[in-house]
Image (cartoon, rainbow, N blue to C red):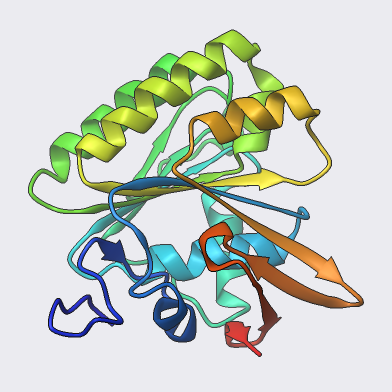
Length: 233
């Protein structure tokens, strides 16, 4: 699905979520450019939104900055819900594998490796390279998870990093999803994160079911994650 200015339901300044029904509800998808936090329980449900988003890119390059698990593990998890992330336009900045030891950090196509989630300068440089390589294209970027970076770096360093990187990515035409684990951070850290976002979406479990909340809509969206990924129910 692409934005068509002739259709009032689909706005031009949107980038598809990769979930057709959600695109309709959001009038075309996530804001582009934009920095968007998705706060929810740790696990597959929250990650599934980012997998759909990354896989939906056709003319755009996509980058997953992973600190919680390896690129291979992310690709495998996405495949369990029918989403392919082993595509030519999908790249990884791997901040996880090196923490397991040198022997675990093997060369992979479309993967840049840094020494860990505390290496913010290296991550910043690699994002600069990604922006340069994608000149003229829109960008899809995912931080999986931002919570891991928050736990490995001082607040002041993360405040500066989010401010600089968020502005740089928006200027480059990127829509960036920042996955945030619910219940991990205190109110001060959550406020820091929210301050650097254009939108904050939440995923919550209610009575064994999940609801996705976008503040501008004013109502929760019931969702289900199954073999075909995220579905609006």
